Every structure is written in C-alpha cells, then in structure tokens.
Image (cartoon, rainbow, N blue to C red; front, side, top):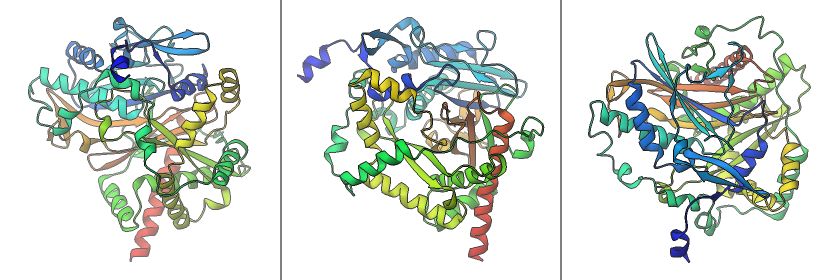
Length: 477
C-alpha cells in the first residue's frame, strides 16, 4: 500500500484540516499572513538572490501552489510557473495604505502562491522581507526556505562550501513526498502523554474555549496624537511603511533577563506570556476603562520530531490556549510561576492535540465548519510565538564576523518575525534572540489598531519585562 501511494502523483494534494481552517479564518481586511524581516548592513545581488530562491523553492513545492476547489474540498495544485520571485517596491509595494498604518498585501491563493520575498535597498544596507500565508507553512517551515536560500546565495558569492560541514544539513534535504505525512501524527500519539486528560477535562476545556471568551484589546485614543518615537523604544528602527514594529533590549538587559529566568527555573517563553497577561490588564485599565474580565494567549506548539528534518516547508503545528482573569494579572511572581506550570502541563498532557482533533471532526461538515469559524472572532486576545536564538541556529552555516553573520558577500545584522494577527486579535508578537539581544516584534490588526498604538503597547510590554527583572534583582539582593 505504501509503495502504491508513493507511486501516485503528489498533486493535487488535499488540504489538511488546519490548512482549511486558515483559509476559512481569513478576512479580506485581515490577511492571515506572517512576516520575517532580515536586516543586512550590505546590499545583496538581486539576480543571484532570485536564482537561490528559485532553486530552494524546488525543494518546497507548497510555495509554488495555488488552490483549486472540487465540490466542498480544497486541493493544492502545483504549478512550476508560480515559483516565488524576489520583488522590489517597483514590482509590487511591500505594503499599502498610509505610512502610519501600512497594510500587508493580501494573497489570492486561487490565483497565486502564498509566499513573497521583497528586497528593499537602503542607504546603509538592505532589508529582505518574507510574507507567508499561514495556510502554506509555519515559522519553522519558512525558516527552512530562508536558510536554504541564503546558503545558496553564500555559495554563489564567495563561500562555495557554505553549510556543507553541517551534520544536520546532510540529514535535512527536503523530500516533497513527505508532504503526504504532514498531518500524520500516528507516531506522536502512539506514546501515552505524561498526564492523561479525562473526559471532564475536555468538557471543561471546550466550555472555556467556546463560552468564556477573551477580551479584544481596546484602541488607544491618544496613539495618533502622541506617537512614541521608535528611537525611544530601543527599536531596531522600523522604517515608514514597514509591516512590523520592533523593540530590542540591550545586551546587558538581555543577559540579565536570561540569568534571572535561569535562576527562577523558567523559560523566556514563560516570562513572555506572563508579562503579556500583565500588559493586557494594564492596557485595558488605561484604554478600556477596566471593562475587560478575561484574557487569552494563543501559543503555537511545533509538532516536528527528528524524523521530520526532511519535511518540506508546511504546517506541522497546533495551538495551545492559556487564559487568565483580570484579577490574576497583577502579582508578577504568582503570574510567572503559574504560567510556567501551565506550559509544562500543556506539554505533559498534549492538550494542544485536541485543537487538531476538533478540526479533524469539523472538516467532515464543511458548511457547519465555515459557519463556526466565521462566528468565532474572539479566539485569543493575542498570539505569541517564541522563535528562540535565531543567530545561534545559523552558526553551523554562516560564520560570525563582528557580531554579524557573513553570508557570502553580505552581512546579516538582525532577524525579526511576527505571527499573523486576525479579526478579534489586535496584536500578535514574536520573541527571539539575536546575537545576545532579546527582540520583540509585533504585527497588528490594521482595522482596529495602527502603528502608533502598537508602539505604545510594545513600550508597556517591554517595561513590564524590566519591572519583573528589577523585582528579581531586589529579591536576590
């Protein structure tokens, strides 16, 4: 049977329930797209970059697919002419609308693939933006594409042996046929979780998810009048019209935060989620008159294993949901400890697999699923993804020179990422570490917030990290 399946053409490829959810969840005014921003201190050679992307995309066929509909079911249809191009603003503007609320370019997945690259030259270097529709892949998948593209670029511009010494690289050549397995979790589920969920647990979780809805963050009425200058935020300097906003901690602050987390036996991800709950309540006290009563964070959970190193760019993740009442968001120590305990409980119980199980059932009833998704506009107050130490993940491919990654004839300064916002989720955050500096990037719902509001939220959020660090220092002394 496996031999027969392997002999069949890969395309047209049915969408998974999660991919179907992303398609149904999207609103024209709020595209389900994520951005990755790479900042270089040097220009890039555009023709060589384009060739590198084309060669890499051959290993990741979902980047050259469009949707076709057959009855109620959607399929991926591969078209080699749809391989992503490296665009410039002359080809297609990176964003549209006013500079103080730039909107991402939407995708029509029935006509075009769900991935775009933009090259933006600047006086002091250049930027490379990647826009990805979530139906086509997750953050881990697009990281594969970027790493493959930059590796090929480096080999063509002065480093012919780039990446060849990496043991992981030799085991991670993408195999397109593995896309058939992207929704197969048999091996994962064959092992019992450390803590099993009871039927009552699942009933309680379902009631919480569907009936105890989280607050939607209010818009700041003063944001447009009192914009916070980016330089004051310690930001990387997001340019006018850029799709993301950023804030960076200094190296000294970042080292102190990492040490304090280690001393407290928590992860940076735990701190990031806890401080987000605290910021929600402060924000609503300031801008929402304290009416909000519950908050919820959506946390992506990567489901890849070592056996998935050869899986091309795709979605292989689920989501976990953490919630807090407003009265649980004030005591920092209690909040951080409770979040760390809950994240551990999520991993031990694999409760995030219930989200995929629910989608698996829902796709059997397409019209009902469409109605439910269309009326579920308050799934989470915010989305937070922790991308880890991105610069460290590149060390086996690109040498470090003066605090930058040398990629052939180019030097990479920084990498930023933020997950998609959605209707009802007004801000989404990505946290990562680059060369010893903790970076926070934000995307936002353009119909509800603007760049200035997002800057204000980032400032409040970063200050809560600093308040926690100060409190930890006071305790230790």
